[in-house]
Image (cartoon, rainbow, N blue to C red):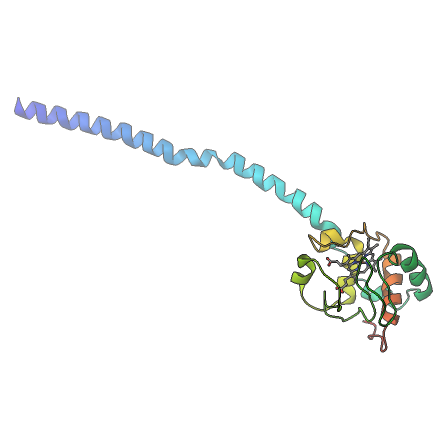
Length: 175
Ligand code: HEC
């Protein structure tokens, strides 16, 4: 009897063990079923890429030599002058004065209170960075206070940048 009890006990224990293992492995396997929600997260990735896509823009450098400085000045007067001056020692308006902006340290003009977003950007204003900034400032520098929709036309951006380049004692070399 003692033997039978031991054997029965063993069988019961094994059965219980098997059940527990079954449950546990179910529990372990279960998270794999969460692959679907995980896929849904992956599905969002293209949307995010699409949102950031406008900043991926072809280089403006090669377009600058053929750009039209006078046309750029006219576009600037219409689109940017409400907020920016470009003359040497010119006033800060809603935006900072842009004298000698090509190669100028980002967010560095005296007396202007920049957003922390632009201050965090760092670096100097290259032609390509200005191109991205004026294409869509809020996409390029998230949190910028430059409330400007942007210039979608590449030719207009090239003309404006070519004009900005001339507003310096020694215009930076064309790329
Ligand atoms: C509605 C006002 C407004 C308009 C229009 C505007 N800007 Fe700005 N711009 C700003 C403000 C404000 C800042 C400072 C942004 C910050 O601190 O985040 C700025 C910053 C900049 C900077 C960076 C300056 C620096 O010292 O780092 C450049 C370059 C610039 N603007 C170019 C332009 C050009 C070119 C245009 C026209 C195509 C334009 N902006 C139109 C308000 C404007």
